[in-house]
Structure formats: structure tokens, C-alpha cells
Length: 455
Image 1 (tube, rainbow, N blue to C red):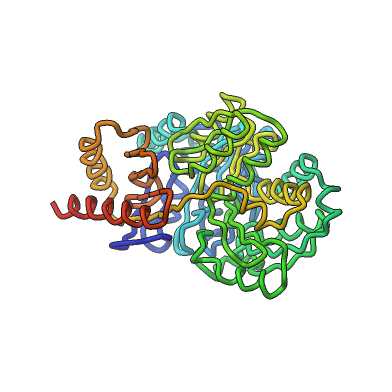
Image 2 (tube, rainbow, N blue to C red):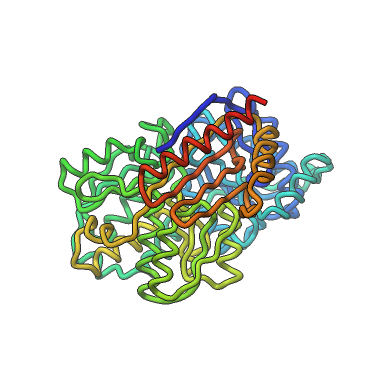
């Protein structure tokens, strides 16, 4: 359940890139300046550029091209491209870096730049700080007319991505089951690729919202209250499972054959359960992920390592620990054997293989998992004030985990309160053994924060 107070909007510039609202804080000039800074930062090489389907994508793309060309780079236009496909293509193309033009789960009026290094990973905190230093100093490389590169195109990123997934999973086992699969792509970057992959897996595909036109039929964050269309579709068409992508196609939500959303956290739980059943090893998740992952890992005798929130934090720990699987509890499954990034396509492949190797219905598989009750909320406030309030809360809890905001763990519940990296909000996540306890703890946490906001 997502709860909101005091809606607001702002420009966010930080380690997660630059993000803002089009026609207000996010301008072509700003995007060009950031692209110019990035081109100077990566050393004037080839830079891949992909977008989601937002109506502002061309404004953003050509502003980025302008900045890259000015800084001596060779822009490579991937067109509309799922984020995981851009990351994989960046690593294997010899590019100096990449830029994803997408605001991910944010509403349609938002857009953003996410910066990618030559290894196909988002910039980590140190690299992002270096880029911000270049941006703020404004001392960009200025390309002479005689050195000016041309914009190139690359239409092969998506096919390359899908080939990597299909070579990893057991395609024949999935094809033999002839699953009937509903898919909702929110008219986003996965609109063409997701149905195509499912057809390659021998599935009967029931697609909705697969027009990559940037007009989102529902809020793009794939949480239960936003996916009512596919819930009714799965029941009506008697599908075996329903998948929902966000608009940049890195997150995956799932609906069972009865039309019930399993919750985005359980996308990762399912993937961890199946991956560890094939190969034991460590698991990496962030602090806001359900305890069900810990329970599953314990069943296989495996360690769970927790990181700060943010994909790159999980990814870097996956790489350093040589983890088998990891991800975030927002539907972000990371299969490092394919590529260390959140990838809804890899998630679909692994979960369909899980179903293919089981004699159970999808709801039967989910029913065997440990279950907890989670509430996710957010309170809108200015970023500086959000950090101040969390610091005040930290002083009140001497035994709290302070890795990212404030996390207080108890035997039957935990609470995480932290400022967002991407929006002017304080995020609140509660998980408890019962729904009643979760609601009780959430109300108290909300009361504590609101009282500090009034001071």
C-alpha cells in the first residue's frame, strides 16, 4: 500500500543523476550541460543513448546529443531501449559510457538522465560525485569544428539483450509447458521486446498497453493499486501468470492465475528461491527488502548481504561477493550471470523456468514461500528537511542500523525511514509478521515524522 502526504515537485541533482519535471525544472539547456559534463568526464569517446517512451524523449535525446557532440563524443542512438539492454550493450560495444533518458517509475511529466560507465553499470557514488564536480565547475572540453563527430544509430541492443537471456535459461523446458502469459508494458520501453521474448519462449501472449507512445495508461510504478487492468485480464483470459513492467523495463511485478498481485517484493523472493535451488551462494539485497529473502536463503544455508538502497550499491556488492543472485524489493531482479543490473526480462525468464520445472500452479509456488506484511509510504517535504528529520530520528534510536537512513529491527517487525534519492520525500517501509502489527507500527512512525515536521 502506497500512502502519500503533501505532494510536491522539484529538481533532483545527485548521485542518481538529474531528474525533474518537463516544462518546469527540467530544461533542454540543463540536459545539454549535463551531457557536456559527462562527455568531458568519460574522455570524448563513444556514448550510447537510449530512452524510454515518454513524450519528452526527443527533447531530451537531442539536447543530450548536442552536449555530447560539443564535448567531442560520438553519440550512438539506441532509440527506445529498455535500461538493461542499454547497460549490456554499453559493456559489450567498447563504448566510453552510456546515458539512459528515463524517469523510471515517476509519472509522465518527469524525465531524467542516468549515467552509465564503460562496464555497463550506473555510476557509483564516487563516480557520480566526480561527474557533479565537472558539471559544477563548468570547465567542459570544447570540440573544434574539425573534430566534430557524427551521430550513429544502433538497432541491435534489444536483440542482443534477449539473446543473452535465452542462452541462459532453459528455453526448451518453458516451451514444453506452453504457458498462457498476460503482459502489461505500460506503453513503455518493453512494449515490443517483452511480447517478442515471451513468444520466443513458446508462450501464448495476451498483451495490453504495448504501444510505445509514452501515454501511460496507469501510474507507471508497478505496485498492486496501479495494475488493476491486468488483474482482470488474467482472470478473464484464464492466463497462467501476468507480468507488469515499469516504463524503463527494469522492474517486474507479477499477478497469479487468480488475478491476485503477489507484491513486488515477491518477484525477487521467487527468483532467489529458484536460483538458490540450482546453485548455492550468497544473495545481495538492500535494507528495504522483505525478510522472506533471508528465510529462503537460510533454507539453502546461504548468506544474505544487505546494502544501502540504490541499484548500484547492490550491484557492486554482488560483483565483489560473486553472489549468485540479488536485487531490490521493488521488483528489481538481478541475475549477474546475464548482467549485474535490474532486469525485468531476466526476471520473467527465471520465473517461467521455475514454473516449468514445477508441477504446481503459480499460486501454488507462491503459497510455499514465507510471507510477511509490508506497508510502504512516503511524506513529501524538501530534501534538506527530509535529511534533518531522519537525523533527529537517528538520535532517538541508539541501536538502529544507520547504513541508509534509519532502520530499527525487532523480532516481529522492522521499520526503515530514509530520505529518497530521486524525489523530495521521506520514504517509510514497515514489515511485520501480521497485518495488524504492520498498520500499528506504520501509524506510530507516521505520527513521529509528522510531529517533527511541525517543529
